[in-house]
Length: 174
Image (tube, rainbow, N blue to C red; front, side, top):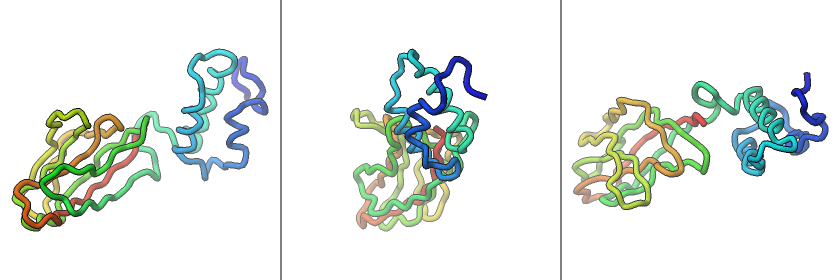
């Protein structure tokens, strides 16, 4: 059934851009690209395009209204962590990831590893947890979300070796 008052589907720029894409092969990044090109005035059929983007996102399992997006969980191995902060993961613009788990693989001469949320403002950021023993999972305690504006960082303190490693798992929720 067509959307009420919508122009015919054959005239939809969304469907034209995705005409050779199946629901099974559609990605969240494709929908993000289309969404970024869609104007937000809500006139001349764009409101109907919003509905189509949502419907396609839900039908392809690439948009979630209540939880993680399947097929987007990643495992990260961050090494060469030293006394300066480094970025573990910074999502793209408009993306939101949830931190699932994180553990120290190696401290290698450092006394403590500090996992935190930070940005480029120069503020100290928010410490998620710090540990001083190898192979310990970090305590997350709450759902922790990462965005392009506030992302996951790590550092060690008093490191002499500079080869500390962190294992992390994230999943996209938006």
